[in-house]
Image (cartoon, rainbow, N blue to C red):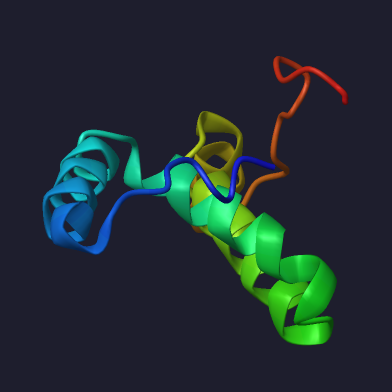
Length: 87
């Protein structure tokens, strides 16, 4: 899983930690959140699965598919999901 990526002497620990932090800060926050939650889903049981589900819902709400549902509701019409692929 890549959970241990480096072993360094104590004197170099802070500098190595700073390098890892800078690398993480350059990554997608959403991708990191999903990766972290997927690691926790197995051991945190319901809480981990719930966190993963909520993150997925937040991502879905930002899609054009979700916007079609919201727009249709506001316009009091049936949504037209035909242009969105079935998974």
